[in-house]
Amino acid sequence: MTNDIVPSGGGFLDELNLPKIVAGPAGEAIARLIGGAVDIPAAWFNRVAQGIKDKTEAKSVVSKAVADAASNLAKNDPEIVQRAAHSLLSKELRHQTNRESIARKTFENLADEPAAQTIKPDDDWLNVFERYAEDASSDRLQELWGRIFAGQLRRPKTFSLQTLRFVSELDEQVVTLFEKWSPFIVDYDTIPYPPKQGEEFSDLLQLEDCGLINGVAAQLTKTFTLSESPGRSLGMVPFRFKDHVLVATVRLPVTIVIPNVFLTRVGREIYSITKTRGTLAPIKAFADKFPKQNVEELRCVSSPHGAETLILWSKPPEPAQ
Image 1 (cartoon, rainbow, N blue to C red):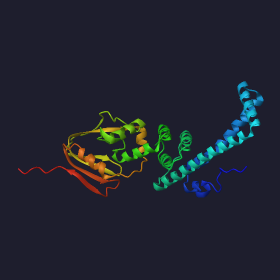
Image 2 (cartoon, rainbow, N blue to C red):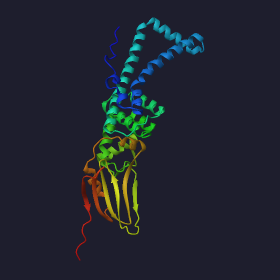
Image 3 (spheres, rainbow, N blue to C red):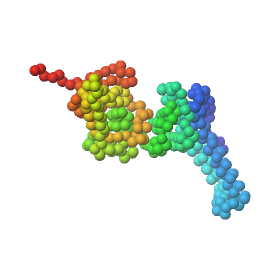
Image 4 (cartoon, rainbow, N blue to C red):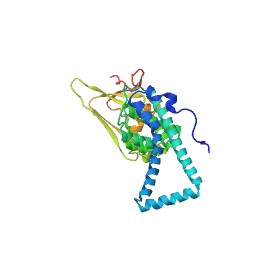
């Protein structure tokens, strides 16, 4: 009987020789992700061998009875053994294919944003990551797992086990919805001036139900207070969006209160790897709603180098006396 589920040709490591391209901890961790599935059949065969040993030594009446029943079933129906082997190989092939796809995407993310150094995640984190990531079959979720792995290699402890568990249960609709709202997020942790009705309000309720944000129906605020000091009558308050920073130039002293919904820990961690480009529309909407008392100017600066500047609002000149 030919094995029609195992692909021919070299593996991912043969194709890219990844550990040589990504030297050090990153290469080691990615190589483990690719080769980790090899341990699973070995462990399975070890369990089978242990079961035979248990039967021989008669350590447990229950295990002996189960082993006898399984043996009789296989003896009377040898095709069940073939089906079990085929099922096992099919499952591991899917897992291996998913692992290799995620490894490719991890490598691509590391190449897009090279880090001065990478650090191998601890074994507990890797164990959980491998277990969850191998079930990701869609391209979009594989891309998300690749970004998570690359982010963890660049900055250890960036992604908690809680976030890994969350992503393992994530569907593409929620990913799309969260990416839709990512340009509205300020300072990596809030969505200011959240809608209170309509379709956009429903969007936020769905993100809250999923555990990415909280406070949609509450009256939560974020307060910025700047005090006056000798020789300093003006101050600047930055608000960081996706690709831009809105800088408010204010006359001191001032207190700015802005209604918000807040990202959860999982939401903040996932936001750090979203790749939706920022747009000016949410920044202009923020500037329109921004309280203007004691404000001299609202300026939008492209980040990180501030090459482009756009004045969104400035205080009208005082009327002539």
